[in-house]
Image (cartoon, rainbow, N blue to C red; front, side):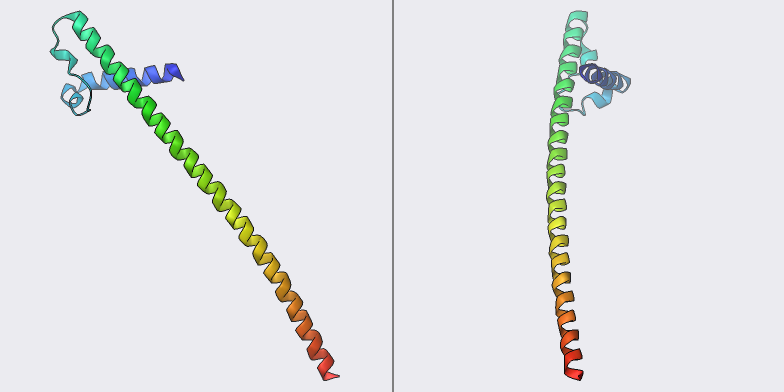
Length: 111
């Protein structure tokens, strides 16, 4: 999973270089191409990579939390549906008994 995060960050960084103007559209990224010294440019790129990895990790955590919450909501909804089905089955059985009793009373009354 760590390799995938690094690859994703590298792809994002490469995309930033493909369109340098869009790099400033991402809050927190620095414009590294303005640096003339290679050490400073490398440090800038490393800082951007770290920032992107942290942003990706935060997005992953947030998404996993949302998925877990949706899973809990789904489980609660399934439990509620099961309870309603059980209640409906019970009511249908009671209704069948009442109908049978009413039909029995009608049959007794005709005799």
